[in-house]
Structures are given as C-alpha cells and as structure tokens.
Amino acid sequence: MLVMPPGHVIADQLAFHQSIQAGLTHALNGGIVTLRIVLDRPTTGYGDIKVGENFGVEPVRKLKAFAEKPELEAAQTYVLSGNYL
Image 1 (cartoon, rainbow, N blue to C red):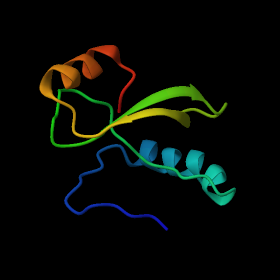
Image 2 (image 1 turned 90 degrees about the vertical axis):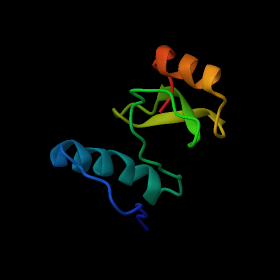
Image 3 (image 1 turned 60 degrees about the horizontal axis):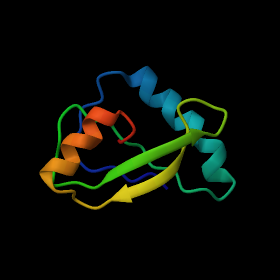
Image 4 (image 1 turned 135 degrees about the vertical axis):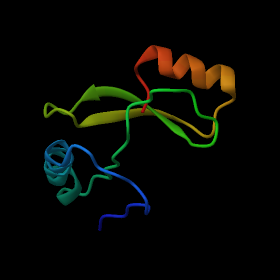
C-alpha cells in the first residue's frame, strides 16, 4: 500500500520512480519503507528521521532515530548535519 498526502508536487518524476523501485524489494520482504524529503530548512511541525547506513541500494537507508516535532534549535542542528530527512 502506498499512502501519500494530497497537494504534493513531484518535480523529478524519474527520481521518484527510482525511489519507489529501490524501496519495493524491502517492502515486499516485510520492511517498512518511508519516502522523505531532504531538509532545506528547519521545521518544528513535522517529525524528522535520522538516517543510518544504506542497505546497499541507494537511496535506501536504515532508520537510526526519529525526532517527533523537534524544537527549533534541534531542527536547525538537524538541517546542518545533513543526516536527517
């Protein structure tokens, strides 16, 4: 099952399709796959995912941690680290 909120614009459809294909194998084997965007600014209204090592197929990465609606200072740190989506 693929669940997506309404109102999103997918500018790079090829990259989107490649991301879906990369996660498909893991999903079919019982894994939970989430699609996220790279942070370009701090946000406090959404949760952020800290990514870990990859599964050997880019861009599929293991989830290392989840931060539920972080405070602004933490959100700013996440953006700068480049390790959060």
